[in-house]
Each structure stands twice: as C-alpha cells, then as structure tokens.
Length: 389
Image (cartoon, rainbow, N blue to C red; front, side, top):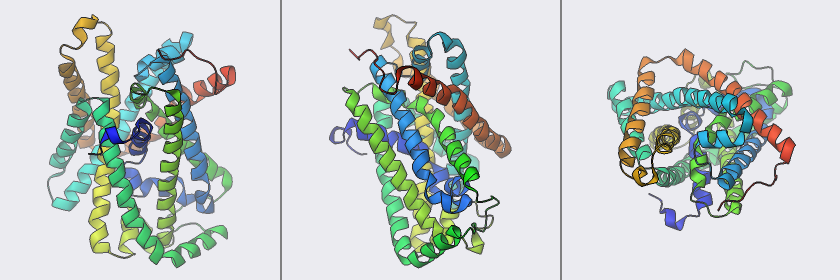
C-alpha cells in the first residue's frame, strides 16, 4: 500500500473522494456515457461544472466537519442542521441507507460479474470474495480506509493512463472526427437524447446531485487534519484529480462514439479497448480496473456507516470503556452492513437499483444541497465558525 506517512493528509482525503466517485460504473465507461457523452458536444464542457460543484460542496461540508469536530454524518447533521436536525438528520440517514443499498450493492454486482467473466467462478462466490475484502478493510478504521483508497487511486490512475493514453494517440483522428460530428449536432449511436443544452445541463447537475450524498462518508477523514488549509487543499486536489480523470476517459471514448458496436454495450470502455491497440493486454487491465473501482466504492461507503454506528453506540458509554471492545463493535457493524448489501446484490433487483439512483439524486438535493445553499446564503461560504481545539 501507499505509505500514508509519505503522503500529505490532504492528498489522502482527496483520493478517498476519488475512489468513492470513480467506482466500477466509471471504470466501465457506462456512467460517463449515460450522463455526458450521450448529450453530444455538451459532454465535453459540462464535466467541469459537475466536478466543480461536487468539490465545492465537499469543501464546504468537510470544512464544517473539521472546525466543529463532527466526524460522522450523524454528528455532522445534528450540529449543522441545528433546530431542524430532527427532520434533516433523519432524512440524511434515509439518504445514506439508499446510497448504501444502491451504490454498494451495484459495486458488489459489478465486481462479482467481472470476476465471474474472468475466471468462470460462480457469481455468488465472486461477490463473496468482494464482500470479504470490503469487510476486512472497512473494519480497521479511517486510517486504513484512507491508506487503501490512496493505493487504489494510484492503481486506478495508472491503469487509466496505460489504457487510455496509447489509444488516444493511435485513434486521435477518429476522436477529432467525432468531436466535429457532435459539434454539427450529431449524437452518438447509442444516444436517445435531444442534444439540447438544457437536457445536458440537467444531466450534469443530476450527476452532481447523485454523487453528493457520499459526502457523509468523508467527514470521518477530517479527524486527523490539523489545519483548515488542509481541507482547502484536499478540495483542490479532489477537483483536479476527478476532473482530469473524467476528461481523459471522455476524450478517449469519443473514439467509439459512432461505432456500431457501441449500441447496447454494457461496458463501453471494453469496446474502446477492443477497437484500439493492445486489446489482448488491455482487456484484462480494464477488468481489473472495474474490480478495483467497485471494491474502493464499497469500502468507502461501508466504512462510513460503520463509523457512524460505532460512534453512536460509544457516545452512550463512559470514556474509559470506549476502547474496550471497540474492534468487536466495529466488526459487528461491518459484518451486518456488508452481509446486508451482499444479500441485495444476490437478488439482482437491477430495476430497483436503477430507481434507487434516481431517488438518491433527489434525496441528496433535499437533504444536502438545499441546506448547504441556505447555510451559505445565511453565513456566507466563508462564514465564521468555532475553531477546532
């Protein structure tokens, strides 16, 4: 793993955000096609907006969590929402459960399906392997999760560069041709959208809103920070890393925007690799990236709800007793949530999962975005709050 002692904490926090957003859906290319490329030429510009909004709102929330020492999403909600905490803290609890049920079960399913296709092992056993890894990592607390996220981020970024850069160079002519066709109003072969700016803008904002609820798993990572400037740097690194990775993928996959094979493809990135150079080598690399992305998303999200649950139990205990049995409490919480999400992934309720993503975006809009905006309007984005002691 990456040595966290040699890596600034702000970079580690940014990498947790990176691995949370860029899971299996991103590595497969399906998410980027659905929310951006399908809308034509606007897909080249609107990722800047969605990634800026996401980094800005994450910065605002993490800054508050650091200054108020609210290191899990329930403690944050009870402090941030004030007299409205009964409504909004509980609403966010529901939002986070939707997040766990949808995104994490999808991560199990994605990782399990990819392992199944690579090795021919039964699907349920593949998801069990993914679940075991997620359980073990999330059990050992935020330092290990951040260290794991840093390692996975480096591997994912290296993998993306290895897969995308050579193919972008080789297929650059096709990419520029695709840009020209989209600039003229033509849409990718798999698109059913209008190509209008309004629809593309709505999709970019929905993508931001869907990703926003994952801020709840980030609060725990502000505890080891020592200066609010580290939060500022983490948000900047988060924006740069996420935006560059997304744009690199979008530009690369423009090479297949008008390929007939794209029609109905569940893994657009695989179509991209198979139409480029080094398919024999890069196809397994893409599969590994999908698995790493799925595992990283699952680890981050399970760790967030484990921290919240264990903190809630330990707040009711004497300080002298909190250290006793802490690992047992964490293990029970991690096991319960991991098994629960694993069970959902076995049922295969993909229609429910898809609806869950839509509901998640609307829930995030109500429970996070609106209160954050109202807070900014009330005290300003740089409003004075008590300092961490």
